Length: 393
Image (cartoon, rainbow, N blue to C red; front, side):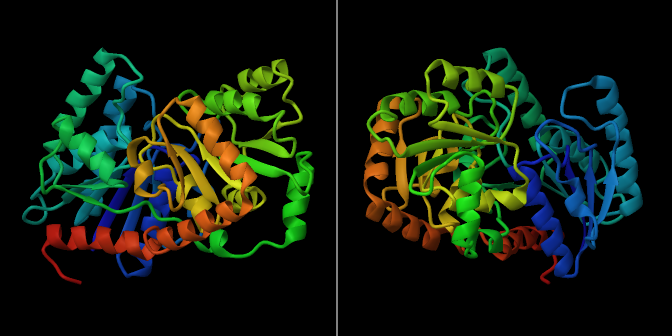
């Protein structure tokens, strides 16, 4: 099949990693794949370089940016539509909010122009633009736009069952139009063993002693990512557990705010910051730690949860969106969102009990190995394409 994927930008992020893995595996399976994306700019870093040397084609639409900009959005729509006319794909598969809207409207407008019912229009739901932590007016706007785009969508592929449930509850799409394909992870980096010396050197780089119990959080230092709850619990636990250390991996516009908060609480020796790490170093950060703590209030299904489990580490997470589809009493601890008391208790339990950490980590690894494998995800995606295009490869 000829397949076109469209995503807003290739910054560091779960939707972007998912899309690159999908394009790579589909190409390996013999499909003709093109990826359309906007410029890779932003403080979170970028993944654009990972497209170099791949067998799929990459086209950059310079006006496609994340922020709403009517003039640039119109120019992007016109260019995407022109590209689709030239490429004549069997499937248009969109990702992220901006590319999801522009790509679906463009793809749907061309239906039946080169073959009956083609191109098939598929949208991946990695997360939803509406949520309880922004204004009702903005949520109504996003829902209205998504409803309009849903009328121009043949099928939705969600990264978690929770995303499907939330979309349907908001009146987006219809029953039978959805399936779940868990967001694939390049598992080799997380399953392979890392020499103890390398892990020790990583700890020493951030002033962490070898026998410390490290609680790692891998997330942008940004609103709704929950670092403030982790700092609050660290304040309660630091004096009781002298060997406990918290490690924040990532960067963002709240970096200085959190560093100042940590300093004001006298926790500079207990809470460490790595800044932005390249994707290739994430497995090292996790394996150099003992417990993953993820307190985001809004996430489709955070990739850091199955990544930690693949590394054999237990996970603590707030019970939001798709988290409960991987975190449970057998793999970690699932907590009421914003509940610092529960967070503190769960951290204390796991800091104290290494055997429990090891059991939960081992169970977690077994539970996600197949579920988050690239071939597992692409099998589901390919099946959707085949049904829509009417071919059985």
